[in-house]
Length: 170
Image (tube, rainbow, N blue to C red; front, side):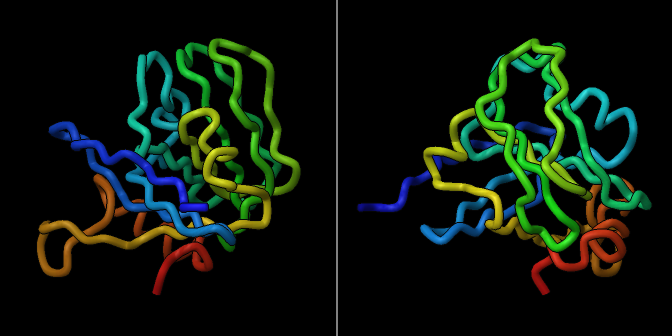
């Protein structure tokens, strides 16, 4: 059967997105991810958003922290999500599938995780994404001086280099 396709969205002004690829036995899927790499961005996440385009995601990074059990919840989150917990090498540790909007139940990872990717609820099942598959980050550059930088303040570049070495495409 044909590989499922993601519909492609147009970026909003002022939203910085980084490409993230989920690699499964059935194919690779490219998402455009907002990066949440500081406390406030991780705290707010995708709360109070009425929609999330099919090809969009949010990638939560924990710079300088050892991999640990991560527990996410859906407080103030209006749409169902698949919460994908990632090991330092980009391997999917576990997935909380099609989560319940507005729930305050903690949804812990099945093992130590150093990053979390949130996509629309149900997409993991539709695309065949499963624990053991891999997520790759792409170190894109922006025109901010010689060679550019990643993210708003370069922090994602630090995370990619230091905490998620195995996740980055070289």
